[in-house]
Image (cartoon, rainbow, N blue to C red; front, side):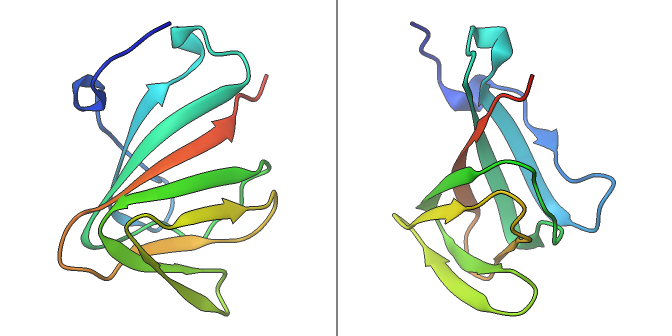
Length: 114
């Protein structure tokens, strides 16, 4: 078992090669922690920030812990707010934007790809 405060995990810029702004990621649980199936990321999106419109080859489950925003597939937009949960199927194009007045914080779980 391993327990730590996620604020002590280094925050990295996310989506550096893609069109995004104000997005940081803390990899809270990974292979380095002994995980073999699942990784956990804390995604922080600054006010007005956004991820790129992108596709991942795996499913993703997200929990909104703070803030508000929207998620889009490039055609349709859905509102997000604290305590919402999202399921994004594999190969589903998506982008998250912070439209609120505070930092948008998300917990994302993804499979560990070998």
